[in-house]
Image (tube, rainbow, N blue to C red; front, side, top):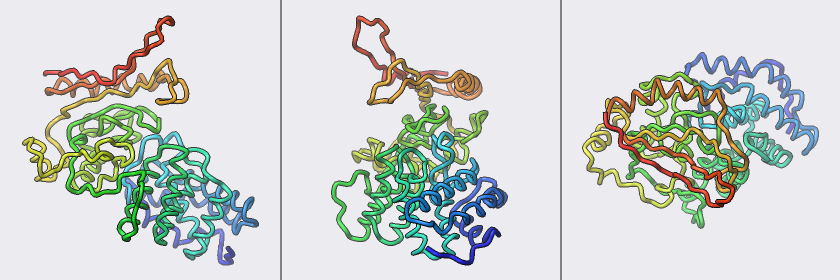
Length: 392
């Protein structure tokens, strides 16, 4: 893994590669600022390149790459393929899809564009730094490796890289890469047996959630409470108005994030829906779009509407994970919503939720857990869904 052409000057080819893989909601200025944030890391990367040995040196390189990726990431960045940031990204120090693409670009720049050399470097880092937790070195390298394996038609290896991440943490990017790996294998004509994720086509199916529902929650990855376009944030863990705590009702209901989710449903790619978690996808029970007869939904499908004049039909409240129990089926530790998060949602209730409930007929769904505190009673009762019809 030798390279003699590295200089402290930030390589032009890296800037072009980053612009090819990533986009910014701030346009060209956002990509330019990403490059400026990465400049200080380039010299540090060269200091550990090439690795002096297969273990210590590769581990040091991996750590330097992760530091650069997380230092370069910012809330305005998304990938060209997954154009939204997922919940939990702020907790892990960056969005995994964005950071993995930065890592990939940096490795290829270190290898002067030699794809085989970059592949060998990624393998060495993965061997030296296996994934142990969310968004660590091994986690990001597995995502980069999954893409490299797909490009080399090594579909089983690509799936294995994604699964190594999913063994550690529920990650929408890793789920997406597992799907892409196995779907590519099926498209190649090779049999896919015992798939752990739904790989069938969804172009003939429809889901009304992003057109009907505005939900609060934290998603399966945790993260700050936010708004989502699905009653179950774990199945579509991409927050609306990401990093905007004071978003307006219109920004949430017709903003760029929910428009992109709606676009994915209408196009039939379902990019932002979990093919591993969503029961309707997994069990094949999503309705066929040709069979939709509801006039409002029929109009949405026929005219490909991603901006809606009508308000939500359902509002689901599930943003408070507080509970005095830590059941293994739900969580591994006690959770209590912090006062600042509760205050933020009190503001959101006044500015967004209450106006929504007042404007039109809507079904309010409360998701919470009621615990009997009497120690003589051992049973717990869960209020999974409480539906209340709110009439204006």
